[in-house]
Image (cartoon, one colour):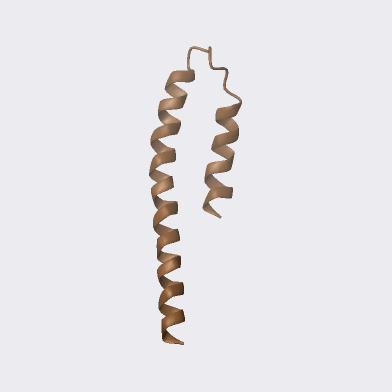
Length: 60
């Protein structure tokens, strides 16, 4: 859900940027900062889901 709701729309917006436009470097910097932060959230939620699965399999 995080990928669909957050990453895909921002990737699409980045793809529409003209690499030669004046504001593209600033847009990339902003994109990279927030993408990295939310990518860490995605990694942590995936790790938590895997841990929950492991605990549930161990308990059964």
